[in-house]
Image 1 (cartoon, rainbow, N blue to C red):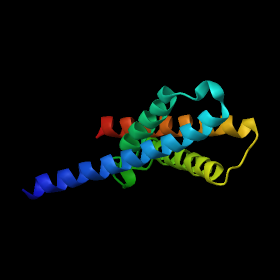
Image 2: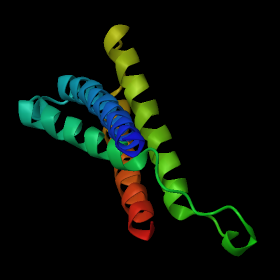
Image 3: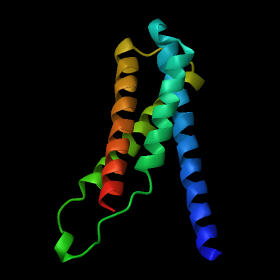
Image 4: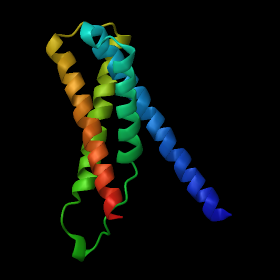
Length: 135
């Protein structure tokens, strides 16, 4: 019984993180979509949310390598996951700031937000998948 409760709690935690990723994707999509008219579609918002859901589900709480002398190399999966999480959440935070403060940044910042988000969740997905394949 205790094992099932622990596994259920872990699934709840990961799904909660994934929903936070979807919300971050929604914020980035709303900002980028409002600035680039070609991306003002429901499909684009859905894509951004799905990428955020997948990235935060796979890329957070990854299995780590044992910490001992035999495994002294850099854990690429953990590094990718951490860098991706930082990049994605920083982009989401900047997007929320632009929306809430009603800023009108240069178009280059909008493209940087889009590429930063895509790069961040891609690093999370790759890092999380790599960590789970070796576990």
